Image (cartoon, rainbow over all chains, first blue to last red; front, side, top):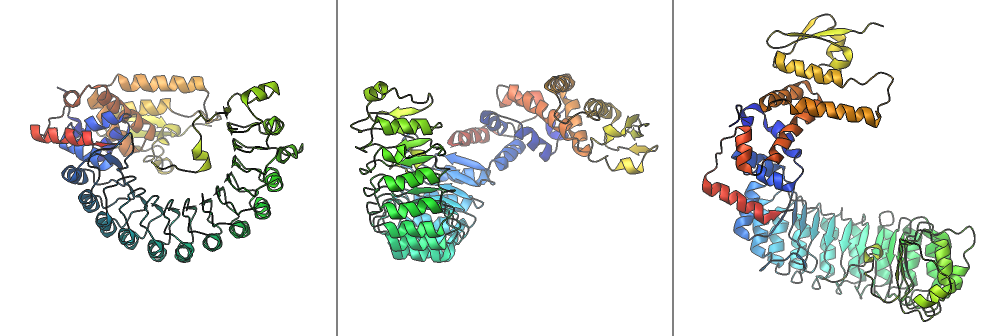
Length: 411
Length: 158
C-alpha cells in the first residue's frame, strides 16, 4: 500500500487534470471505479454520451453524468437495439439532461409526438435535433419542440412524411437562429410553407428539400431572397416543378452558394444555368444536375470556364452534352475538379474524356458508366492515362463518394 | 550586464538564489521581479525539498536568449529526456507535492509533467484495485455500488 493517499494530497482541479491526461476511454472508465470522489470527477467531466438503455438506466445515467451536452441514440444497421428508444425514455432524458445541446434520435422509429413534447418542455438549450426517419412524428410534436427550443440551429426531419407547412410556420415564429434544415421526402411541404419559413428564419445556411415534390419556383425564390447572404447549400433533388425562375433567383441573390443539387429538375435549361455560373463563379464548389435533360454544351462550358472552385460535378443523363463542352476549354482554363460524373451521356466519347484528364489534374473519381463510346477497352486503345489516385467507374461496381455530391440515401 | 538575482525562501527556511529567467517561469512569482531584487521572497506553502526540485526544473527550462522559440529537434529531445528522468525517479508522494507547488506557482510545464506522471501510473495499472493500491486509496464503494457503476459503464459509450 502506498504511503500517501493521493486523495489527501490533491484538490479536485488537480485530479481533473490527471484525468484529462488519460488517453484511453477504458482508463477513464476505470477511473470511475476507484472511489466515489473519482466517480464524481469522471462523471461530471463527461460531455458526450451514447447509450443503449431503458428508462431506469437512463435515469441513473442522468443522475451520474450531470454535464452531458450531447446525447447520441441514433440507430443504424450496425448499431440498433430492441425495442429502441421509446417516448418514456425521452421523458427521462428530457427531465434528466437539462444542459443538452445535441440530441440525435436518427431512425428511432418508436418515438411519437408525446416523446417530442417532453423534449420541447424541458430542453430549452437544445441546438441540434435529428429525428430523421422517425416516421410517426407530426406537426404536433414539432411545434412543441419549436416552442420550447428557441435556440435550435440544426433540425433534421428527413423522412418525417407527416410534417406539413404548419411546422415551418412554428419554426419561423420561434427558432429564428435556424441554420440547417433537412426536409428530404417531406412531400406535404409546399411553396407557401417555405415562404412562411423564411419570414422568420433568415439565417439558413443549409436547406435540404430533396424529393419535396410539391415545391416549385415560388418557394425557392422566396428562400433565395430571404437567406441571400447565408445560403450555402441547397438540395432540390427531383423537385420537378423547380425551373429556370428558381435558378435565376439564386443567381440574383445568393452569392455565397457553394453546393447546389438540382438533379431531376427537368425544366431547367441553359439560360438560367449560364447566369448562375457567372454569378456564383467564385463560390460554387459542388453542382449536381443529373437528369436535367435540357442542359447542353453552352451552359456546361460556362460552368467549366467560370467556376474556378468547382470540385464536384454530376451531369449524368444530360443527353444533349457532347465532347465539345470539354474540347472548348482553352490553355488558360484550369479545372480543380475532384469528382466528375458523366454516366449515361451517350454523345461523350474518349476524345472528351481525354480532354478532361488533360485539364483535371486533381481528379479522384470519374463515373463513365453506360457510355456507349467510352469503355475500358476503348480508353486503353486511345492511350488515355487516368491519374494514379483516381477511381474510375466503368461498370457500376465502385462505391460512390456520394458525400461530395450531398445526397444522403434512405437508411 | 550583470543578471539580477532573487532569493526565494521556502516554508522551512531554506534559501534559493535564482536569476530572473527562472523567476519568470512562474506566473505567480513573475511580478516580484520589479519589487524584490535583493530581498528574500517567502514562499509559504512549499518546503525546501520541493522548492529545490522546482528550481532545478526551471533552471533547465530557461530559454536561451537569442535562440529561436522553435528549438531544434535535438535540443527539444534532450530536454524531453531530462524531463522524463527528472519526474520518473521521484516517488509518488513527492510528485503530489510537486503538483501542488507547480499549481500554486503557476508553472504550466511542470504541472503538466507531474500530472502526466500520475496519469501514466494509473494507466499502467491493470484494474481499479491496483490503482487503489498504488495510489493509497481506500474504496468507499459497497460491492453493489461498484457493480452498478460497472454496469452503467457498459451501457454508456461514446
